[in-house]
Image (cartoon, rainbow, N blue to C red):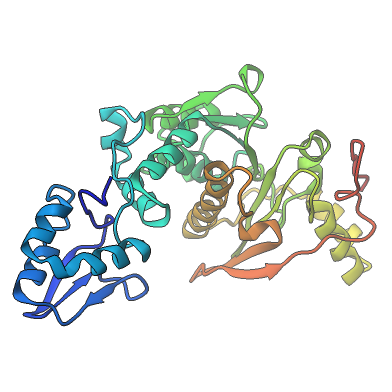
Length: 353
């Protein structure tokens, strides 16, 4: 325990500010300064390394005992630095940066390791076969998700699909290429029919030949009826939308957004039907926009995986809207629609368009 072997959290170096002060960390929102220190106290605080015992530090400078307690209370010191759960040496090396990053936002390194283990045991499905779907699948694997299910129809890859992390070959099976890239990331690509457990979440992307600027609610009807949590991701033209995250028994859902679009524009159903039938030869889907939307989707999905039953991420009640070229997210509140049945209690809900 770090109360006996004090250790600062990852990314929080102990730095001298002068003879009588030290600073722990450099992030303006997290950095802490300890002032009016004696030479011995400053020297002692420079050894918050997880190796030097608390009793040794207090032997050198007894007056720092209150400071050590306060640093613990502020979350500056790791409450439980190790060992890192059941992580193998290979996985600790592979996901070392993720472990250190999680340790900054959890109670301890041990808790961060538990979250990585939870990711390793988790199954997340990705539905769709466009650029964003590939980025989401590979991003989940890179973050340590153990099993990624590739759902939806397969297609032939093109040169436009190739990225440094996969797919790698044109004129091949999109699903096979993404599955191979997942294996290189350490994940288990799982066939739809071979899924051995219910996914923690399904990320619903689009087909490569679709040009819809939103996620068609019909793509998630089965998920809504089966009570499977799902997150919508749509990238088209110079805009992208991540969300909503639809949680079982909760809203808003994709049909809520559809109903609100109809309320705002009486011609919307006719426009939407025409867009569904449109399959452009060259779909506009910029690479940076697809990467940004995919990264946000992965981050939102990991909140669900890391903390089941915990606070819902922002997309449970909002959508994240991005627009090229900056691709900065704008949070748009999303609410249930009164005529939508997604939040009704009891029974299986089947949405009718």
